[in-house]
Length: 103
Image: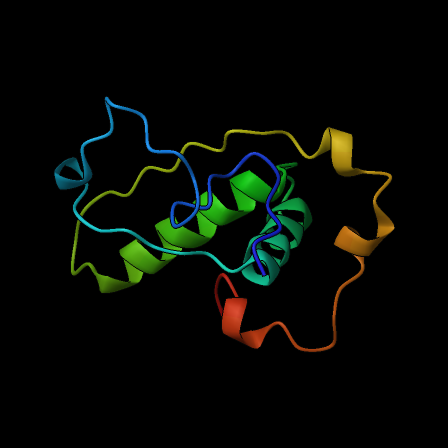
């Protein structure tokens, strides 16, 4: 399911003329559930990000896990403030292990 508001679903999105797919080193697809799980994990660490920020942080962690050394930067494009009233996002499912930020 692609349920991240504001994040393009590249398979079905209109591609702008300035987009250069060769400019990216790789593309990562964050499942909606992983974006929400990462958003909740960030909130537990004091960072209030929205689902798009959760997806960006999840992708950054995936990249960092593959590096022997280096720096990974993620831009969190949204605040979680507008999602505070959405209980379904903040309710933690029993199993989030596949989306876990860190052990």
